[in-house]
Image (cartoon, rainbow, N blue to C red; front, side):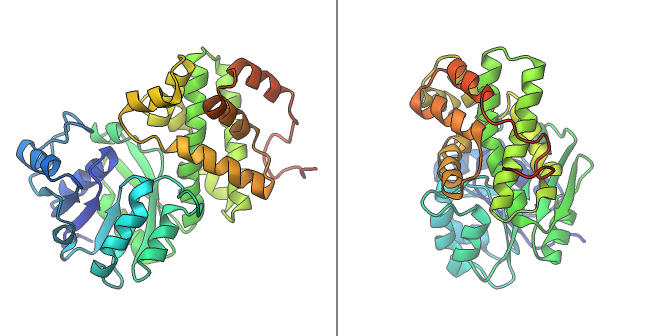
Length: 340
């Protein structure tokens, strides 16, 4: 089905820009909302988001704007691609403008401090009249911008939302799979940011392939263990939004969280690592929040505990790694053997 109504994308970062342009290239009018009017005007004049996706030429029917009401006028599908810390405040602003049955699709990966709410939960709370979906998977924005083959997952309880998004985003280089496990898909995309920091940190220390494979598989076990305790479907973690996103985020220097971890491994402080990145690395905040929630629910997460000590308590990584190797040795595949 060809999309005729305009589409809005809230957030002019790397992924928001790429999603907006992918849709615009299909002949759909797209409004890219940004807080900064000067940055929006520059994008419209130069047809490029030089800060976040340099060299990626934008379609003529993509219009950047700082006028939120104008961005939402007449649209049926709204992508939310803003930092997690701003999602609730922006949703409160748009709530009076959103009509029943309009679709709100979150691409933001993060957890709200204080409430432990995922972005889809915030969308549902603040804009209850909308139909909610989540887009997540191994989707490095710069690779999508280069039109490299990519798969993603649209998760929603609404079959129409899933069908519409699959039709809207599908292209020769971008394949969209469907899921009904909104919470699991979103939690997978959020949790993997923690382990990407661990992977980057370990890479800076010159870890071998044996170590890398152990880190990835134990990360997956830890992610699924925590997610199931929160109500997610464990099978979700065998797909793109689970193991797929974990692999790309933990192995690619393009990953923001990986780069933060690598900088920490080089001896930089957390503030220096984040400053050098110049973008939001959601994994830093997620690490703190997940560690607190895991302790509250008594979920065994040794990688989270060890990484927290390194990132926030300046513990020596070699000593933390040594202690972790002395920890409990649970079953290889989560849920196969009972945990004592």
